[in-house]
Structure formats: C-alpha cells, structure tokens
Amino acid sequence: MAFDWLNKFQHRVEKDPDYAAKTLAAYRLGMKAKGSIVGVAIEPAPDCCAAARELPAGKVYHPDQAPLLPLPDCPQGRRCACLYRPVMTYQQ
Amino acid sequence: MLDVFLRIPLFKLYRRFGRPRLLPLNLTLSPSPKCNSRCLTCNIWMKRENELTLEEWDKVLASLGRAPYWFTISGGEPLMYPQVVQLTQSVYEHCRPGVINIPTNGILPNIPENVQRIARACPQSHVIINLSLDGVGEKHDFIRGVPGNFRKFEQCLEQLLSLRRQFNNLTIGIHSVISVFNAEHLDEIIAYADRSGADQFITEIAEPRVELDTVGLPITPSAESYAKAIDHLIAYVESKRFTGIARITEALRVEYYKLVKRILDEQDQVIACYAGWVSAHIYADGTVWPCCVRGDNLGNLRDHNYDFKEIWFGEKIQEVRRSIAAKECHCPLANAAYTSMLHDIKTLARVGAKLLRPGDKIGL
Image (cartoon, rainbow over all chains, first blue to last red; front, side, top):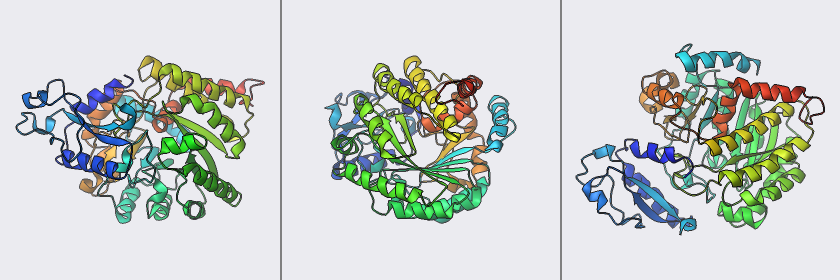
C-alpha cells in the first residue's frame, strides 16, 4: 500500500491519555451525522499483547461497543501500538 | 518576496547544521476541525477539540513576528470558524505575511461577505481563496457527501469572482483533490475550471494523513492512475500562456505534479523535505506539528506560554527533524512540497530553464 511507512509510524506513537475516548467520540459523531463511516475496527500491533491477539480479526464495532485501547492490563500502557481505524462505506 | 529567496540558503544551512535558527516561512493554522462537508477523503470533521481562543491565537501570532511569509488558514472548513475574520486580522497585524491562503468548500452563504472583510482587512497581503471542486455536478456532491454542494459551489464562485473586481489583492482559485473517486474524471474538472473564470486551478492528491484520520484508507489513486490523470493536467497547463508572476507559479506547479508522480512511483522523499524547518502546522488545540501528515506532537503552545519559539527551538523537535532528514517519511503534501521545492537547486534550475526557453508558453 502507498505510504505504508505512515501506518507503521502511527503504530509507534505514544497514545494520549484520552485516545480511546476522543477517537471513539469522533466516530460516534461521524455515524450520527451520517458520514460515510460505518464503524470502527481495531488494527492490532505486530507485537500486541495476548488480549489484543484474541480480538476477532477485522471485526467492525459500533463506537459504543468497541474495546477501549490500550486494553486492560496491556503491558505497554500508552505505548500500546494497537490502533482504531474508521471503517468506511467504500471499504465494504 | 525577495526576503524569502534570501532566506533559502540560510534554511539550507539550518537543515544541515542546525544553525542559524530560523522561524518557519510557511505556516498552516487549523483553528477548528469542524466542517460541514462529509468528504469521502477526509474524516477531520468528526473531531472535536478544546480549540484555542482568539486571544490565545493572538499571543501565538505575536510570538512569530514577521517571520512567516505564507499562511494557510485551514480546517475543517475555515470559513465556518466563527472568528475567522478576526483571526486573519490578527495574522495580518502581527506577521504581515505576503500571502494568506484560505481553502473553502463554498457551502455557507456568508462566505463572500467574510472574504470581502478579510481582503479589506489585509490590503498588503495577497489573499487567495481556493474553492474545493472534486467533480462536476452530482459527482462533486457524491464525493463531498453534501447534496446540492455543487450548486452552492457555483453560486459562491460567481459571487467571489464578482468580489475580485473590487480587490487587487484577491485571487480566486479552484482546488481539486485527486482521489480514487475522481482520478478518471479529472479532464472534466479541468475543462470546467478552464471556463469558470477562476484565476487558477490547482490540485493535490488524496493521501493518508494523521490530521485527517485517513491512514490506511484506500483513497490514494495508484501511481499509474495518478500519472494518467496528471499528465493531462500538465499538458493543459503547458498549452496555456501565462504572464507575470503566474508564469513562475504555473512552472512550479508542473514541477510539483511531476514530483508527486515520482514520490508515488519511488516511494521516497525524492527531494529533501523541509517540513519542520521551513514549514509548520498549528492545530486547533494549540499542538505544533512539523506537518499534518505525520502529526508529530512537538508540544502544545498552551504549555509554552503561547511562545512558538519555545517549541520550534526546543529539544523535542530535534528527533523529528532527524527522522525527516533521514527520509523515514515521504509524502506529496502540497503545502510542504512547494517550500521544499524552493530549496531544491535542480527544481529551481528546471523552472528557470523553462522560463527562459524561447517559444515555451509558460516561458517568457
């Protein structure tokens, strides 16, 4: 994929303390305001924790139901490299 | 403008040796992510931030002084920001830039009134308003996610073109984002722009950006698809005859389009990127970024007494500059690319040669 470096780069960035709340609130608003977003997926990091590995691959969540990142007990804390990604109509 | 060219060798030294320390020439401000478009290529409109107040912006701009030459007031939809006129006035009063560039979706009915106020308030700056156009007719509405957007775009364009006659410092352009959704229709957009009466037609490519929350989304056209579309635009530009400063800007644009082709093809920086030295971005909540693609948090102005220099000459930016200089990133971001091109000798030589070539329609 073009600009794959950016994907890897973003995985490495330390998360803000309100990462989950803020990102999911944005997606919630996006769905409510009838944007082309249909939900949120979790893109696990290559070296993610056991709990992240157990998440169903490719599952699209409603922002209200998405697991909060970092997952509880993630040993990497705010260095957790898993990310939320918006899922768009044109991807389905 | 001469001052800008005089600073080029200094910025080259700054990037290479860390001295002399300089503030950026090219600054993008995003006062708010809010937007009334629902573009397929952008998700910034979903975001909400603890936005800097006008008083806070005023302090930030005072700390920059007369260093920046080029300001882009971006968004979200910048002309939806309630204090956009006052913010622009503050930019003008503190920094007196050569250029103030504002993109807009053309939807709100008060856009021409605000543009008029801005052009009047900034008489010594060149105010450029670029109206977004991603397709003709319903194709535009589909990509922008707003029914009736194209009709509003046309009304707004007509009003702005009429306004242009009152202000020597006002340029009205059309700006298209070339994405997987419209790359095959670029010819139609070029033809529309050509007969629109707009002063300029510019494009950039839809790309993943941290700012827009588009990382990983399949919006960027393939290298082949982009090349096919942009070659038509290059042929169009080269078939036109430009005069005055437009000769230089159009020659630079052709260079930019060719640069994007190479970046897509080679997946490399191609020319040295000067984001983080010459260009920077201040996000709505006061966070300073080297660019909106990486969105590295260099620091928040609220934590630095609104003094841009504290962040720009601080410790945290050093690692980001190292990463950019080491070519750990590459992208076709137009805003940064144009300033980087000004620092690339080969690009400048090609532009110069083109301007001097006899019989070239962009040339003399």
